Amino acid sequence: MAENIYPIFEKMLQRKDREALLKQKGIMIWFTGLSGSGKSTLAIALEGELYKQGILCRILDGDNIRSGINNNLGFSEADRTENIRRIAEVSKLFVDCGIVTIAAFISPTHAIRRMASEIIGEDDFLEVYVSTPIEECERRDVKGLYAKARRGEIKEFTGISSPFEAPEHPFISIDTSRQSLADSVKILLEAVSPKITGNEFR
Image (cartoon, rainbow, N blue to C red):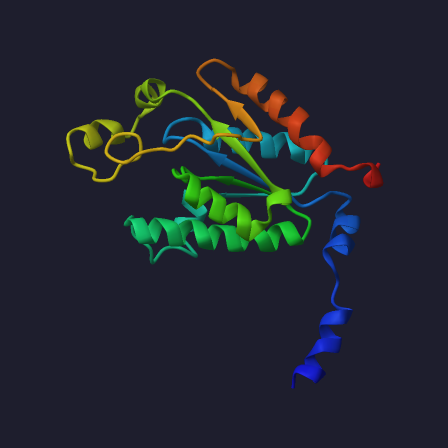
């Protein structure tokens, strides 16, 4: 059976073919940081600016992942790891299609982010650390999650009762308490654009 299947795979389109069609390189832009740090806001703004440049993107975040492919997972340590593993596997498929994939997840440990990077491919994985201090994240918290966590009503809440391990060597670091949204997105665009539109697409 394997002999019959192998020639079919040889005829399948390759990543380079899809990237040539889109005139862009598929990459993974992985936003990590505390709840309320500004990950999703930055992701949405970045997607908007890339769209204006004709770049096809896809955002993955808690809303579209937890309500669909990962709706059977809870928030235990094992489930959180499986959550990121599945996200990474889905992201790998998007990247292979030449799509700029933008993820916004707390992903609090070195190990869990390293797992994602290894699944997707280190050359395609751009880690963006949204380093906004916890004091500012708490101030922004309209849902009162930090307050509930400090009262013990939410267990294993990252930054309060569960640790966050800051990236040691991120591709780029953004502190949204010090930089405006416009300035932050400008910095991101200048950093990621060369990774997306290589010389072969110009």
